[in-house]
Amino acid sequence: MTEPATPSAQPASAVRIDLPDGRKVIHRGVAANGARFHIAELGDGPLVLLLHGFPQFWWTWRHQMGALADAGFRAVAMDLRGVGGSDRTPRGYDPANLALDITGVVRSLGEPDAALVGHDLGGYLAWTAAAMRPKLVRRLAVSSMAHPRRWRSSMLSAPRQSSAGSHIWGFQRPWIPERQLTADGGELVGRLIREWSGPGGGPDEQAVEVYRRAMCIPSTAHCSVEPYRWMVRSLLRPDGLQFNRRMKRPVRVPTLHLHGSLDPVMRTRTAAGSGEYVEAPYRWRLFDGLGHFPHEEDPVAFSTELVNWLKDPEPDR
Image (cartoon, rainbow, N blue to C red):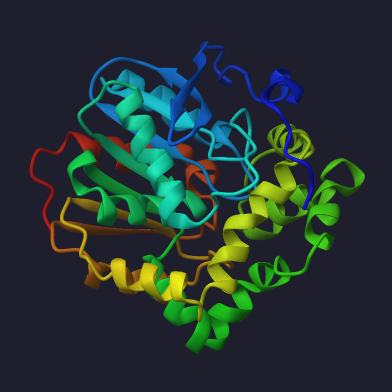
């Protein structure tokens, strides 16, 4: 295991950046669940908490933050434990604890609840938080990620999904994934983002460079793959089986499920089966021609869908 970096060892310039349109977000740290988390904040109104995926950090939501603030929401994007400007702790990367990080941040922000918006791993944790702490989740929006029980069953029994998630199996090796992610200034990060995007292209090279720099902050690569190590190694362990049983609890808040039709990491067939775990209005939105990063590949369409749904007082099934 690599040595955890202290917050003072993290180059703030790599993650405390402004939005592409020049708007300055408020950067600060909040304490929750035994750690300190970096957040970027813009706007006032009902809280919308944005949760990034791999291999990114809060900045992946740069387009949505402005759209949400303009629509009258308090947009807050947090760095997950071990990533960006948040604490690198030696343990605590199981999904139940990471979900408590998220709900703890909601409380630390002084809000009674939040609409959670999660992509990739952030989506997995958003599903988890909505099931574990339903009173703190007002609405749920998930992009490019199946419900945890659906993910588990597909990785074990669906060969095509298991193949699509081959990087997760690769993360189970010690040391090697960390070295690969940081080699040549994070070149692999850029390659993964390009390969996982749709044919129309994903984040531009300037944005990819931002993600590469953030991955090279000491200990980030290790902390980034630890949640995936737990997800696989716990499949047959008591803690993993207990988590899977806990996730039988249905989601009872309005849910928006967003997905790119050409996502090579999370197959559409896998993600689309997640609605069976929602006992509330559930809306499925498939973006034709987009890959694993629909919020960056077509930010206008994604933001429009998200804002309209958040402002709809009675989203239908």
